[in-house]
Length: 546
Image 1 (cartoon, rainbow, N blue to C red):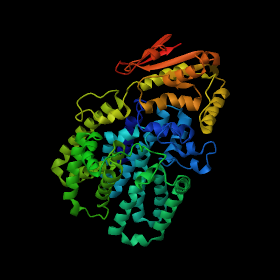
Image 2 (cartoon, rainbow, N blue to C red; image 1 turned 45 degrees about the horizontal axis):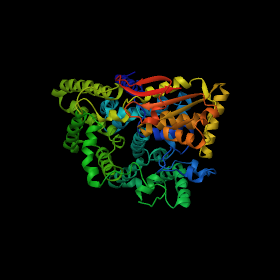
Image 3 (tube, rainbow, N blue to C red; image 1 turned 180 degrees about the horizontal axis):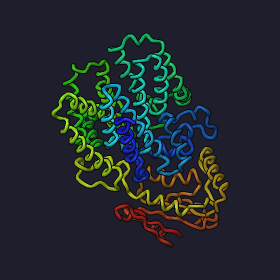
Image 4 (cartoon, helix red, strand yellow; image 1 turned 90 degrees about the vertical axis):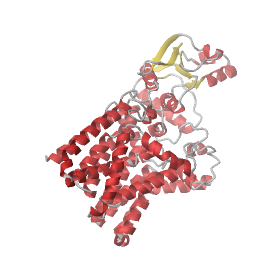
């Protein structure tokens, strides 16, 4: 194995450690809940009363086309998470495994792109930088759809480079683009980037039949989502959540479009620098700024028709993010690999053309590596970051902050282990009842013992964390879960001994310690008490078992 191959192998091992190490850490409190929760049963439902889905509109006869996509995102990432959790279990690791695996492959693709754009050493340095910087690690350690999108964007970019040398590869490019579109609509940013390059630098390829056959393949692969949107339009008069928002369609079923309140164009542009700083270390941004200046300065010396591709991607993607989708942390993850490539180019070019800088460049790279690894571990692997904001601590930690929901999840897992619900509630929708019955049948096949338990919760919760920790057990496993309000509502309507008469022998009352209970809620604080602490040693939940 050559020295470069050994270095690449070491980079990929380091990338794997930083992405898979303690992957289950960090509470599930952001948008990864929406994909992970639905991926368990490939069911388009997430208990969002202001954003009901076509499954809810059409229950009990959900049409076949409603299974082809989801109302707010295409289906490929859900499919990957579904099979991952089937293998590793319905837990943080199972939900996040595909993201981490694709994150390692993304590092490898950065190397391949850098090698083809610039040189092998530039590719190696770019891959090394991307492997250790917080932007790339953050998106790989969460079950967010953007981790899939970044991988397919890089894969499409690499295949596009291959297609410029061998036009038959346009067929493969079409297949990759189709998969990218099936993952996240943000991948459509590749179309104007590739088209602009072909118009200005390779107009001859616009007449190539393989290019148009590749485009046909992309549309063919994406066709289930196209068909889904056609049928959805026939049913409701508008397309899915993303396309309807983009086209400003009237959506009476979705009076509140969560995630679309991204502000005016001026607000998005002004927020861009701050969000960029929040999702990268200050040192990496400084290094990228110097590299961008260096790239511009050495532009004329680059004897390559590929030199515009890197700035073209960064500039058009910046316009797309700032003007259309907004500079959320997860969207800014698209920049990380290409910013790392710019650093890789600058470092390699300076090393080759400025001999007296060689030792300084090597020492500088070691210092940068040490800081970036510490910065990433401090914010993404450590339970709580040390140091001041931006200098050592990143706001990205808040994306899966250790509030204590993981500890609560662990408690419930232990309490309900080797048990199945002895009693359940009838679900509101037929598809939910089917999901529950499937879970009960699976538990019965494992010969788990029936447990007549009920879970009651009160106080202030993160809605997303509650969906992951409590409602997933309710919907997919059949465990009875009620809010305090619903619990007492049943008692008032059906009698205060209703649940005793029904056979519920064990009640778990979960109360967030930061909330202040009223007299009615205090009446449930009885029996055996268990206190849940977060990793800081702070009391976060009180659980009463009676």
